[in-house]
Length: 287
Image (cartoon, rainbow, N blue to C red):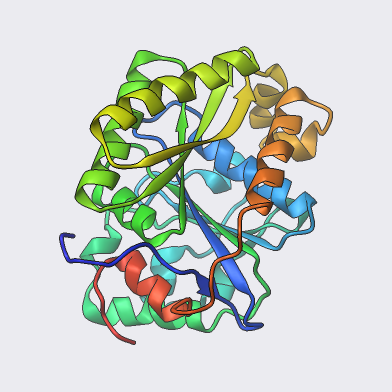
């Protein structure tokens, strides 16, 4: 995991040679609604006529499929082991969202053998469906897999709530990514806050500490309010933006999606699929 990798990934480029945004969503700890943010941001981008793939990268306890009431036949490890193609593993989610279910068991991407690295590279290389954005829902905490996926992405969204434990763990994650792996920038999403000012306070407190001790840019993407409709959507195993489009949380996710779509598109140079997946597995293994 300590191999030198210069900068962050330039981007994935699909069959149609259009650049793909690769966004890792992380949190530093569980219980802050990270997967809900990943799912609903992905759905909001789909609503904005983007072609989105959501990769459930919580390799031991993935729950994107559970959150959306889906029953996968295959998952990422089946792809890596050659039991199915990436296309065969992809679930068709709501609003046309493509979902790659998490691998079951505790095997980490960093533990893959050389042949499995190559299998993963080939799997992504053979992906034919059009794609604008790849969202990676990482595991909670600061495990090797979280660091690996965050380094591979172009942008990292850190989800935090206005609680001391969440802020402490979000800062710890930002510190590891910045100090140890030279990630130059993260975006903060303040989740489950009571108001816009409270959301901005969450951002300001993290930005202030990061500016004092770290060489990393912390940008504010926005906030998601506490919303009973979000809880109801979870109970119904649906995304809130699809189940309750008029809900305050849905409006917030649409706002986050609009901001993401205004980001500059990644440059195509060094943006081929193989380069992205090599970064993903943190190995530099050539296909």
